[in-house]
Picture 1 (cartoon, rainbow, N blue to C red):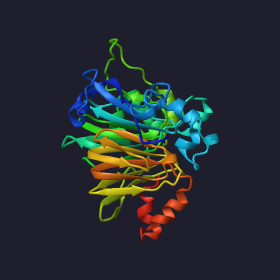
Picture 2: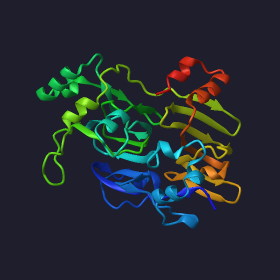
Picture 3: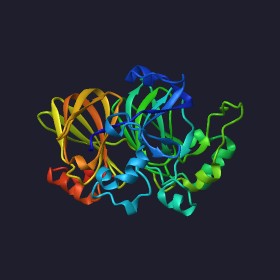
Picture 4: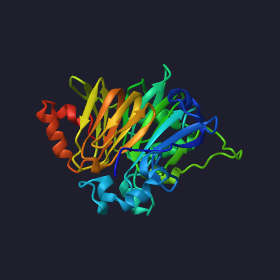
Length: 349
């Protein structure tokens, strides 16, 4: 009954968006400024609809509510989640995004926000040669100094910028000030939250001709002023005959890997968990016990835990994301492969 689930993308028009999703992934877009494509979502602001198989036309939240154990897996306890825990997006920044911050789980609980906190990972799919991200604050920045810089119009001087190239990975912990600048196409793996506090929006106006809303008070409380180090993820590489596996980031919220398949790659979740595959290049067959499903670049599939195992056949690169109930066990497995504590620490958040 269960099989790899594909979904209709949810395209969202944004003031900073463009049309690169059309060229990159052979899509027909509903508008000229599509900034976000929600690939896998179970949120009130966007719900994924199954596009294949016997569940075609059904919404992800309803499916999960009816078949929690079969889709989510033995390790993903229903008592720990009030909805599907991940939101997977593609972002096209034709122009720069606002400078912003997302709250963490503690903040969300304290103020009874309907969303969870929002930790996220960015995988840079494509970028112009001089592309940059705003990632964090200048060292030893205090809340008072930051608030004053906003009032005095000197905010940009207080921010940390990093250059990025295709293939780079950046983990954005909740509480981190950040912004995507123009000329970047990326995949975003995140907690299932759509709460953003804008700090500065480059003096732009919205479609109504008025400046877009800022959330200075909320942002100042949500920002983590104790963090001083902001580096791109280093990744850990494991190479086999038929594929290359890179562990990009480890966190309690999700683990994300990049799998570069030359011929085949087999995974065995063994009903413990679901997995999500986002195809970056090429085309492959996702085979399981009963049949196969084709996945092409730009497509996302949800592998229900009930499948027990699956295999990717073909030449492709995918982002593979899942949740582990035992992060320490996962890290111990990497140590057994002779990776050092320091190497593992660099991708643990």
